[in-house]
Length: 161
Image (cartoon, rainbow, N blue to C red):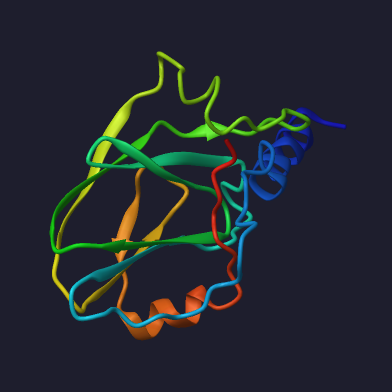
């Protein structure tokens, strides 16, 4: 096999198989709940994609760990009105055969960096939808009608302690 063919083969493996598989949602399947008069709902989700499927990171709100963002899943927060700051911890690659320990070695990795990614001013009786992508801290706010379609069938991200 020529060097070019080998390089293309390796590139294909990384793009389509990934460097492992990031944790997926394992909890209940998404079910819409409207916000109530005194709180707001925040939906964080990531679609199941082949590209970057081995990358994941931890999501923090106001300095506290709330969930992990893997490949294909959602996480819901019911928040009081107020200001919230979101940050992510460096991407972690799940290597094939490597056990994923959510709150142990990766989270304590001194080389990992925290990146501020989002400020939210939550208002009562309002829902917010954030689609996370596999690039480090890439997030976009999505309109409700699009987000609800994308959330269908996704399972909740669950931190294992």
